[in-house]
Amino acid sequence: MAMEKMKSILKKVGIALLVILALIQFYRPARNNSGDNTNAISKKYALPDSVETILKASCYDCHSNNTIYPWYANIEPVAAWLANHVHEGKEHLNFSKFSAYRVNRQYHIVQGISKTVKEGEMPLSSYTLIHTYAKLSPEQSATLISWADGVGATIKANNPADSLIYKKKRKD
Figure 1 (cartoon, helix red, strand yellow):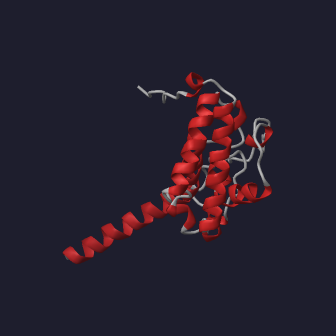
Figure 2: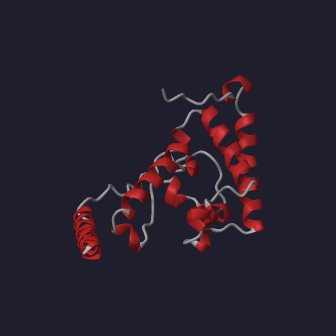
Figure 3: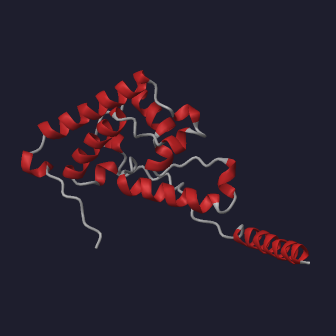
């Protein structure tokens, strides 16, 4: 008797979960496809083709206004998770808005690009697990690091040292 009751409860829970899963399919988070590159990094700093190719393959989905969505981005709750992930990525760095950032933030970001690539923190392993083409080879990493260091040197050479000090805004 207890086994039948348990089966009945599990069946009801399963049906409820299916109904919830079906209903959340109607929620559609906004897509990151504005394509607005008015303030793109390339508007202010040299962006060699080799670097642009790396950025497009490994960075732009989360760090630009031009995300290319995979098929599974149409399924909830994955779509909401991806939208949040892209939103967070763009909060840290948006290559499409880079030249509109204050010079101290630009400098801090290119230093961060160099550091995170050197340490293998970017692109995220959760991204490269599915997007294997986005994994950086040692040569690509060296290219990206060299480019970021070069942009940092350009910023440093063209601005007073005190203008490069970056204090992260606190979120209280």
